[in-house]
Image 1 (cartoon, helix red, strand yellow):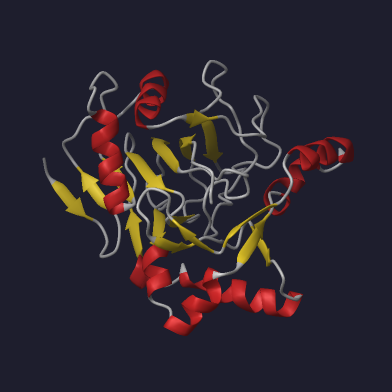
Image 2 (cartoon, rainbow, N blue to C red):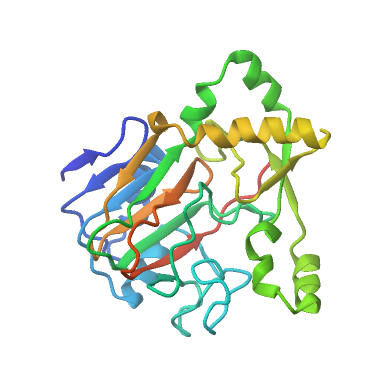
Length: 283
């Protein structure tokens, strides 16, 4: 089958492969591609919600977002909206004229969990006539670009990730609920340089959305380190960019990449649906 590299450091496009949950080889094949390329794009799949969920379960262990809601999200595009009662693992990421795109920041999905999400599977349900691309950055290549002295400095550091930076607005006016969720999901410290549990690759594992401070450093020094790390994802050398068409599916490694949803399609609607895959405990 045809495989088209999308970027120099990550990304591969498959034009003529079908994501068939009845295929017993699906999981092994897709995961091999994922670990090799970090983000895989499957063109023209046109999966319905039932097949989408079945495909995800073939690839890995699906998880339900801790803050999932069947109500209209209070913070559109950020508060996890559950569009299908029978599939709580599917999160709707919907934007339109009234609710503009707000995911235009480099991030990884759910780094703030005790066991960070390994992978994300995203399908294009409604694509605007122009705009709405997504970019990904290879954080292993970003790490390797740093000087040896800087890598040695970062290797021993741990960074605190906190969901409050993202989801706190969803609890505005309900301090009791926020305190309850805060107790259930406290901030988590992870290695700033993560050794990928499946590939052994060293990757920068912090992002501007959830990484709040480096343990053991004062505020100014912590900010210096995190700004330097976070800005590496912005460098085009480490990126690929995907132009969506309706029915496309993307799968990416959340431990080794960051992504950025370009919000340049107002007043048009953009509807995406995502399933995340459980990771392994970080050592």
